[in-house]
Structures are given as C-alpha cells and as structure tokens.
Image (cartoon, rainbow, N blue to C red; front, side, top):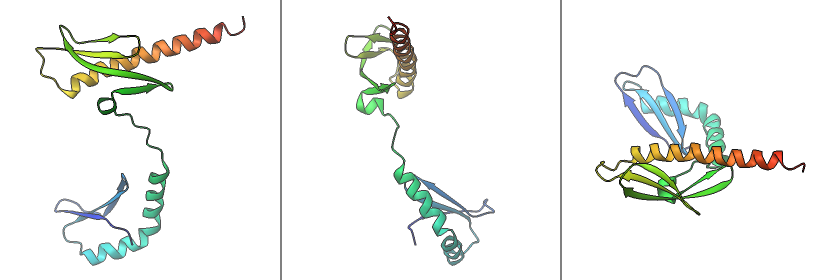
Length: 140
C-alpha cells in the first residue's frame, strides 16, 4: 500500500482522499478507526496509484518568476530585474524588463505580482502584435 498523511477532524462526517503534489492525504472524522481507514484505502489503492501516476507524468508548466527572474510568454523568454525607484512601474530594456517599485512602499510579493501581471499583459500583446504583423506580411 502507499504512504499517506491522516488528518482527523471533529467536524468532518465523511472520509476523503486528496492526491496533490505526489502526496496522499486522507481526511476522516475523529471517530473512524485507523484500521477501518486502511481497509477502505485498500479498496481505493488502484485509484490512488492511478492519480499519483498521472501527476508524475504531467509536466510542471508553472513559472516561478521571482526565483528564476524570467517568464516565458508564447515560447519567448523575458528576463526580469527587480529594482526600487521613484515610482512603481515596468521599464522595458533591450534584453530584459525592470519591475520597479516605489521606495516608500513596503516591499511585498503582492506588489511585484501586480507589476508582473502588467508586464505579462504588455509582453503578450507585443509578441502577439509582432507575430500577427509577420503573418500579414508573409505573402509579400
């Protein structure tokens, strides 16, 4: 059988299985014995293993721009630099974008997230516009 984390609750009335990030968590009411849970899980073992296999095969497509300092937009990599300055804004450069925040603001990932979303929208629009322009002129 597989490993799992058991979480019991006084308020819960049913038993549930959650498979997330290659981990299995079982939620159960406080009065259900572990032996009963193990018996129930034995019947669900095939399903759980199928879910774990699915998760293992799925490619991680998440982006982590604050760790990697880059994002990928339509297969193009955009490099990021986090700066402080007189205003909060996105500044385009030749080979990267600066996400600039106001010095007086308390720096939070939420502010960077807002700037990054703005950059992502602009970059996606520019890349789309350029690709569309190339498409329109491809017959010439």
